[in-house]
Image 1 (cartoon, one colour):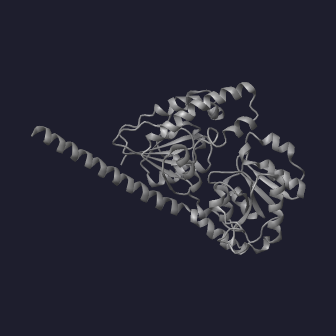
Image 2 (cartoon, helix red, strand yellow):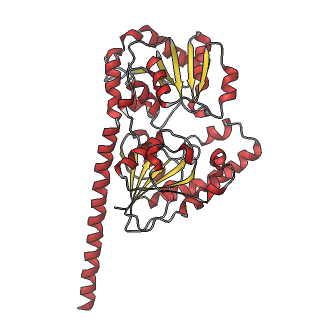
Image 3 (cartoon, one colour):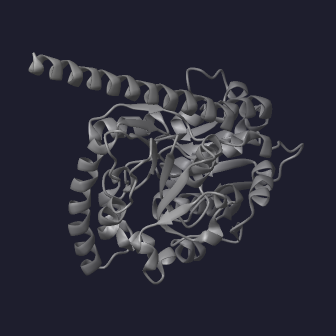
Length: 395
């Protein structure tokens, strides 16, 4: 079986790259394709695979500027020659589902999200990302064109897989396609619970606007609570200026150091809306509760105290707040602190195990195998019908 895995870019190691690593373990013979790649950022699991990049790899500063190359994405991804592959899996958080494949190839798209900055978060991104009027105008024109291409390219996919029910709903809304839900993999064996935890709250992730780290900083400033922030990004300088004396920025940490921060925190603060969000699952894998904005993927990974399935904190894994305001986040934190001691680290970790790497591999393997067989049966039926038609013509 000749397999190609097409990923949007390899410039860091986040949730999308971890999915590709698991896919590469499932298909050790797979070739990799990406728009741009920093080969130094590739994990050992990916370096053993042949990697082909697009012509965007020749752009100076491509790793730093890759998000600004949006108008060139469609042309770049359509240049990948995927002839001869039996199976193509596109890892989609941008344009990769737009690859061109032949009728003999099965194209499965694992969709992390339809491009947020083109669809759901378009107005928020355009108006709140600090773009000047000229860049805002250029972005609006570009987004209009890419949005039409994005919707049209969905027809090139044979089968969709979504990383959450939340993303499956968006695929149905934007592309009018159904999607199988398979949650991303978390390597549970790497995460351990600590016997004791510290007195700090924790934020982990890229420091970008939609993560709403500003809410966590404002809440901890007002309450005088300790907050540790792991990650870097374009919002770093602005957030640093907001931070009070109880807020500490840790920058980029190794995977092991991040796990130590998870295990030692009182709770993870997750004030943004994410499509799935592996960070809350990783915190729960260390037995720590999550205080999250109650929308998006967090609703699938966190059991709130007010959920029908929970009977108090003992059967919950966190607390939700309903709107992205500092006051409601503060209210949620104070509510959490009143029954903080009642949360069960064992129950919280057991909830995270639903999203293990083993479950991802099992479900994804079953789906791929079924679709390959379905495609083969369809091809046989078409060929038999052609032969019957040829016989009728001859007669």
